[in-house]
Length: 376
Image 1 (cartoon, rainbow, N blue to C red):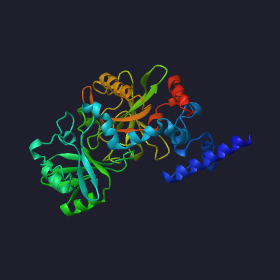
Image 2 (cartoon, one colour; image 1 turned 90 degrees about the vertical axis):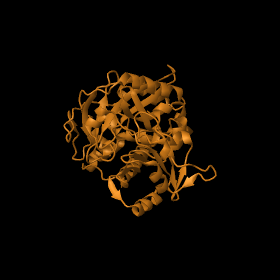
Image 3 (cartoon, rainbow, N blue to C red; image 1 turned 30 degrees about the vertical axis):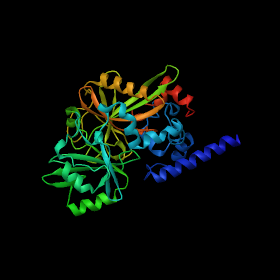
Image 4 (cartoon, rainbow, N blue to C red; image 1 turned 60 degrees about the horizontal axis):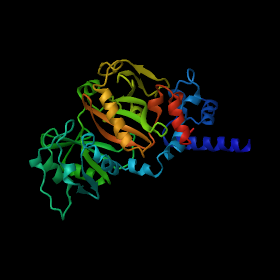
């Protein structure tokens, strides 16, 4: 009894600390907030999740996600969370990984191997090979602006992202337009851009992946990604997908599509690839659902990801090959029918944008996975 009370208090303390770090909490009575803490949930989950329809025990709690799911992959988390390391891991699947050209560090641009610099893949920005600067193997670093000037043509874009971390934080976009540069959509002089680049420590310079037409029509100002959660079933010796969603950006979330930044989350039907209505983060205390995009008017509910079955099976093949990574949240950009690029992976992905649709633990196979890994 005493031990149980201690565990409840300790869990509440950790959740209070997490809530303070994650920003303003939702407006609710202290009594309601404490009630959620006792069950392992942050106040936002009390607004996001449908506890009236579903028993709270069928949801993966915030405490289970923060404290326990981070242990599922053990020391292999580092392999997933380090974006450069994971890029190397995906070397067996070159058609599904964007190119990584180099690293910004200490004001220098550290170039990587030629295979990653030469872009010749569908779905990404294709740079003319003759524009690539000649490299001296004894001098693998150079001024980043020199490389950009020599490499980028009008309209070419790059993604700059910190080597670690997720959630759309620390991601920037660089575009060459009419001989000048736009950084996150804002024009920069060479001097201004040099200052910005000098402040980016350990940022990867990556290929910008062009999304398929259907995703561009949903909202063209962001790359609208598919988040697919995979788990490895050791009993069946195969990976499976417990849930998948399509994130769709908005003017509030731009230049990224993140749900918590104002983007929409639509569940992907695992069989057909059709999207549900899009959920909007409940900043006003209520989850709003959109059958069409509130800004573009594009149809969300019922829209199907082209070639979804091929995408699903290929991703499961990748997850099966990397079966020692038991628990992964994959971020995909669909580039054409049945084709995609993996732009990122997460070792213990957030579940708010997933469980706003339905509780993860309601399916026995998913609950069994979490139980085997001592999460529930």
